[in-house]
Structure formats: C-alpha cells, structure tokens
Image: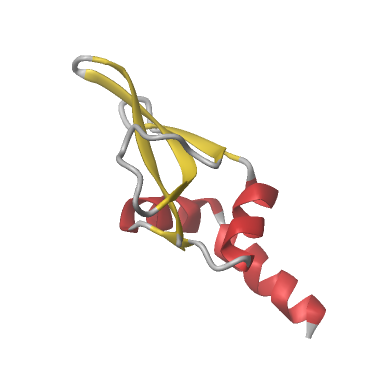
Length: 88
C-alpha cells in the first residue's frame, strides 16, 4: 500500500518537509517512490505537484492526516472530485 506522507529534511530546529509517495512499510526517511510536494511550516509555504498527487490518489494512495490537511487547503480534493465527475 502506498501513502502520501511527510519526509523530514532541513537542520535542527529548522525542519522542512517533502511530501512523498512512499510504501507503508518504509521508514520516515526511507526511499520514496516520488516526491510530490514541499512544506515549510515555519514560513507557511507549500508547493504541490497536483497532477502527481491526483495520480497517486486515483491509484488508491492514502494521505496521512497532515498531508490531507495541506492538500485540502490547496484545493486538491476539489480537483479530484471534478476529475471523477468528468470520467463518469
């Protein structure tokens, strides 16, 4: 099973996170399948590769709680529902 989750980068007391698609059995800093975004909680910046996120969600990937909240703020799930309506 694949999850969309945060991977910690940066230095001490200055964490930034990559949003990655990764196998559930891998550890937090393990090898990821693909990098799909970036999140900086200190400066409150996000950069998302929306087509890649939609691809993994369509294939059955489950986002973690934090990634779900970040994606929801960016409007990824509205685009996902629009894509599903288009194919129905």
